[in-house]
Length: 220
Image 1 (cartoon, rainbow, N blue to C red):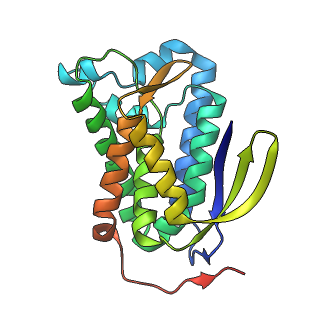
Image 2: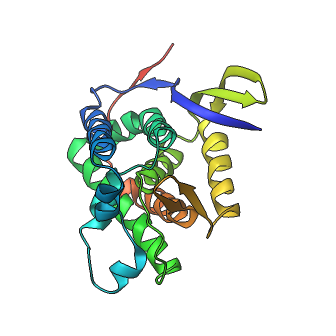
């Protein structure tokens, strides 16, 4: 057993405070607290079910499901990945464009999953699709940046620097291998194909959302 946990971009520092990324994380945490307080009924009400979307019902869940998570590990993992890659993309796009990009990335991920399994009644939830879009944008924008990463191999733990192209490319490859399968969590699931859809959206559209090129401070 092993894994890679990205922590931050070690090659540059954003010139602006990543307020939108921090706000998105805060909203996700607040919604998760509501989940803990209100239980499964709250989650079922606001998660996305492909069959319901195809039938023309509960379209609002395309948005709300982006902010729901099925467990502590689910939300912590997603927020760690968002904080690792989001600030630099927010800086390159500008706050308004970045927020629009994030939400549209989540929408693209959801539509990919609905298209793949239109009759599925498995609840889908989580920020993974939108975060995949951010990762796709990062791969296109800063492929040579070094990402400070926790490397886990059985009981071996090491913090190392991994090129973004290698780290994100490996992550995307694992999503392709598992595409079509559902990653089950406590109260629902997020399809790997949603990750693929979000990632492709991010990689293809990243340049369209970028603002004027600005200077970055190189990290030590």
